[in-house]
Image (cartoon, rainbow over all chains, first blue to last red):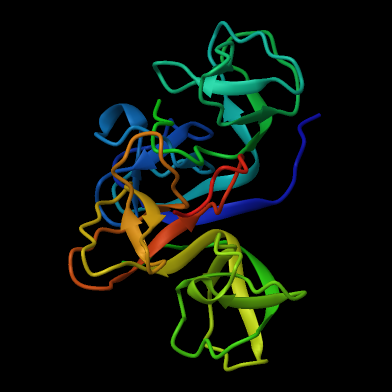
Amino acid sequence: MATTGTQIIANMVAGEDLSTRQYWPVTLSGSDNKCASPTSNEKPMPIGVLQNAPSAVGEPADVCVYGLTKMIFNTVCDLKAGDQFTLDASYLGEVNLDASGVCFGRSMEAAVTGCPIVAVIWRGCQGFEGDAV
Amino acid sequence: MATTGTQVIANMRAVEDLSTRQYWAVTLSGSDNGAASTTSTTQPMPIGILQNSPGASQAAEVCVLGMTKMRCNTATDVACGDLITLDGSYLGAVQTTANSQFFARAFEAATTGCPVISVMWYGNHGFVGDTVA
């Protein structure tokens, strides 16, 4: 059962078509208040997890910047409840196996199959300027 | 356009006149539940961003996590997505030093003196060494 809970939501607008990006990490597009997929942006460090699926530029985009959210993981996901996660090169979640790697949050449930959507606590990137993806 | 969103608010009490400190970083005064300007206390590490403009002994609403406006310094040349630390006056400034602390992330760009911009305030996390120099 997915864990639900409280979120800090940023009320943004889509900087591009994000209709297939619900529960993916997103970042700031470079324009005030706009979010975009990290792969299309020069500031790729994700700001949060997209909660809805805006299909056009300017549509409302609700981004969980801190708290309990669902999030999509990659196909090789072998996740246990409590694992700390990072992001792969496609900005899908994966278990963090690097002792000095950046963790964006912690899994609240287990998953083993391809591209699962998992309940996590998203903490984002905090603390030090060197914490880039 | 300012980004709005959810906040975690601490309901504190101003231990000094903070009527000119709306959207400045504030800290704990050293007395229970007391908010003070970061420059006037022995505990200068900021706890959050002041949301109102209380006089001494009045209620102080402090955003300790989440989306808020924040006042930056005159030298600020901030881009969307920049990491924000504090200068010697505890005004927001872009963090440009690798492996150095940041407190927030900018959701708006600004170039002119002492702008108030939308940020995601994370506060201080992690290590006891994370003090403001």
